[in-house]
Image (cartoon, rainbow, N blue to C red; front, side, top):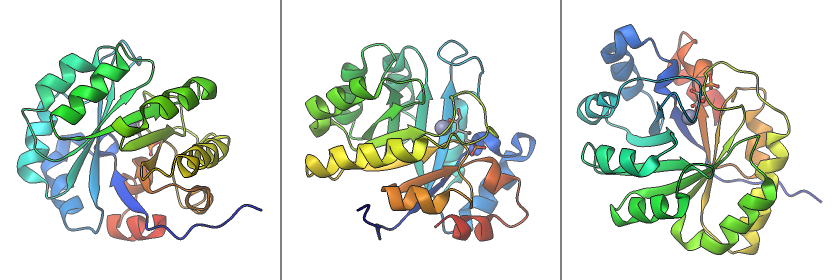
Length: 224
Ligand code: DX5
Ligand code: ZN
């Protein structure tokens, strides 16, 4: 039988969904909440058909935010980006996609630079490929990010099959007796958070659910 989990959920609001014309105000509002991290989407317009905020967003967050940075690189050549952004902040997670160029070298570089290293499984990723990659490289990995939508845009509808992906990743991690965390990103809201938690998620990213609400702290509490 499927066992329910009692792990503590950490919340990572996705700044991509914030009011970017009032970024300083948004960062100050998030600083006052109980969330543990702030999720930063970086896109190159190649790996995904969209661009996000410029890389200088990381300088701004490093200066103005009191939260751990959780950087999600949706880029084809992560190594170039890792070298650049690692000079901009000290502590946090840097996550790359399995389909990016040289994923293993990218994870090794993230670890060498003393950040937590994450790898993404998106709806289009072959589970078999991720299973093999995780089993072979779990010692290099701190976080598996499971995407609930096709990467590129905030505000998309959550794909229900994500819940099974989280369960399957959790089973692999249990088998490996690994402490790797599972993060879910895309379409997360108060309706799916419980199933995601029961499936074994540790970190929930939420963009539109938090930033389109009137009370950020209330929305964050609803997701725990
Ligand atoms: C999608 C991004 C997500 C997105 C989340 O490509 O990686 O982080 O901003 O936003 P919501 O929660 O609105 O799906
Ligand atoms: Zn993201």
